[in-house]
Image 1: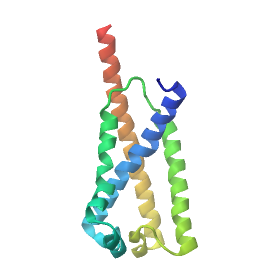
Image 2 (image 1 turned 30 degrees about the vertical axis):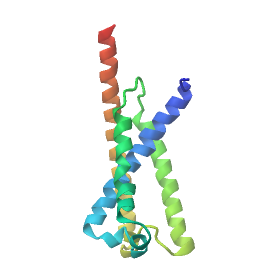
Image 3 (image 1 turned 180 degrees about the horizontal axis):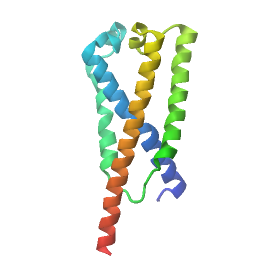
Image 4 (image 1 turned 30 degrees about the horizontal axis):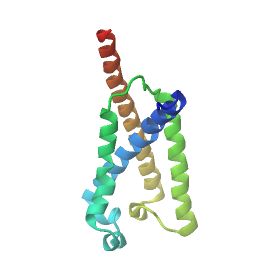
Length: 159
């Protein structure tokens, strides 16, 4: 049974606007900070309670399903950048509100790196992450649409 057009559009926008940029952002950010100083992303309690392979899997293996999804052939799943940007921005705002709320309610940073930053640096870092998310969003939409246009051109040539 084929999903309805509405379901396909929602799926395409959620994948392009949230899943793709956030997956790449998590992987890139985690490993960039991990290389500089492991304790900034992995406090001792994480090392004591979870094996290192699990941490590696959580922050690296998540890219594999993304690559598989991007490489699967699909027809006509074009996503408009500006609509996806609105979805991404709403998601980022909601996530950052939740993230900051945890700090203000419990006085605990869920990401240890924030303990060592001033408020100006935190805002700058969060803004930089948002900028990277937009870059990944654009890259993902470009690749999906480029791949899709190749599929459409091949289909036109066959007919």
